[in-house]
Image (cartoon, one colour):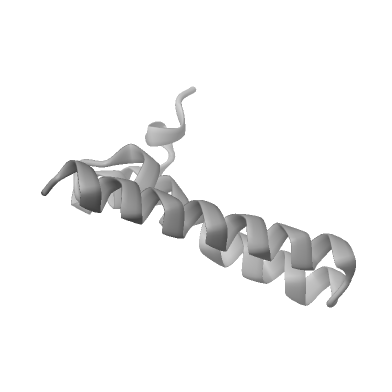
Length: 68
């Protein structure tokens, strides 16, 4: 079973910007927030949040430079 076979995720992939990495980052955002809520503010959740935001921003900048 592929990730795109899951009904909610496949709808996001079909409606997305034809960019699987960006779609995946958008789907992971609420999961990261959920983990912070469930686990509380700790070093682990802060590192996770900073890593997620860093990857998201870096990928957005990379795409912006590539599509000039």
